[in-house]
Amino acid sequence: MANSMVDDPRQIREENPFESMMERFDRAAQLLNLDADLYAVMRVPNRELKVYIPVRMDSGRIQVFEGFRVQHNFARGPAKGGIRYSPDVNIDEVRALAAWMTWKCAVVDVPFGGGKGGVICDPLQMSLGELERLTRRYASELIDFIGPEKDVPAPDMNTNEQTMAWIMDTYSMHARHTVNAVVTGKPVALGGSRGRREATGRGLLFVINEAAKRFKMSPPATRVVVQGSGNVGGIGARLMHEAGYKVIAISDMFGGIYNKDGIDIPAALTHLQTTRSFDEFPGVERVNNHELLELDCDVLVPAATENQITSENADRIKCKILAEGANGPTTAAADTILHNKGIFVIPDILANAGGVTVSYFEWVQDRMGYFWKEDVVNERLKDIMVASFNDLVKYADNHSVDTRTAAYMLAIDRVAYDTRMRGIYA
Image (tube, rainbow, N blue to C red; front, top):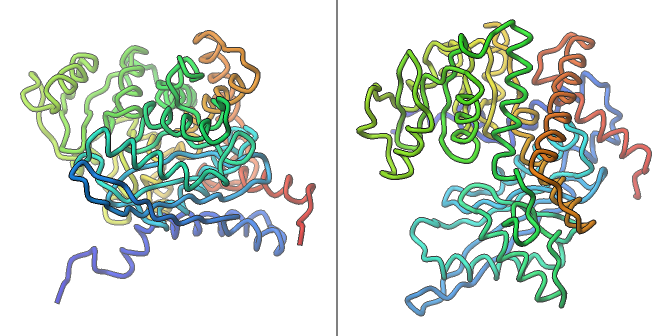
């Protein structure tokens, strides 16, 4: 008989991202005394689409892939959210991510609802041509459901600027004219925004700066641990290093490196890019990703994937500030433990909202056909992230709740107001 924790139904429920999202939603809705009719509407997605995608592989054979697009809410504007390619994609994950996008857009007060997409595939085992054919067929299956005023996809796990360019081109071929506002995260030459690639990491830096001020921490004396080295973790770590923070650990999917006196992050990232590994980077100790999370530090940034901090390890987390660069890195069951330890959480729906904020800027620029300088993008991003952090802290103080609950309450309050004002067409 299997006896591992993963076979424990309680653990399975805890690590289901949709269950975690709903537990937090229910708590916030209860504290808000949310009207029963609004609760019934807001707790479920507006639309879920499941598609089967036939792709001719390089071998000449047809392989059929399974894909999803969930559009969670349209009360505040078009759906907005990424598309991920992974063998682990499932409908519960996509549902949760779509809902998180609704709350994220509301927390930073941009006029989008939440959406998310995914295709079950292993992109590491596919050629560029196979990925292009998969992307174009997936986009064509979504053609009636996406668009600048309906649903605006973006890159996510294992998708990038090239993926978005393929989707934009496929949509434009069907529309018979170029529609660059159908996606964000595109190459700048095709209507992408300057500063978009760094936006999530830069937004993370802005809210960490605000939290550090709250605790009277100076960057040179602030030890930072970053799990992840991609567009969020890697860029965030580099920007924090440039801002004077002491980044003492960083990792990729295979493990991490640690030096209590700080790591030369640009050199470490160059080494990673060159060798595809942190192995043999000088002057550091090796740590695995579980050990990395439990290092003694001032700021911990889980920027890799979901369910990294759970009821199993939350009591061993030793940071003062937890800044969630990834979506759903902490389970709902871990929240109480972290709160009781006095850890200040910058929840994911604020901490990593820099990406969707600059995606909003990109959508605006595309629609008006006028593009901003990068310093303008970064300044406007800072204004929104700092204001949203202050709104969140004020909301938490006024309602005597933790920052996670406050973020959900603030987001639900804003979406509920718009839904109530529009009325429910039933």
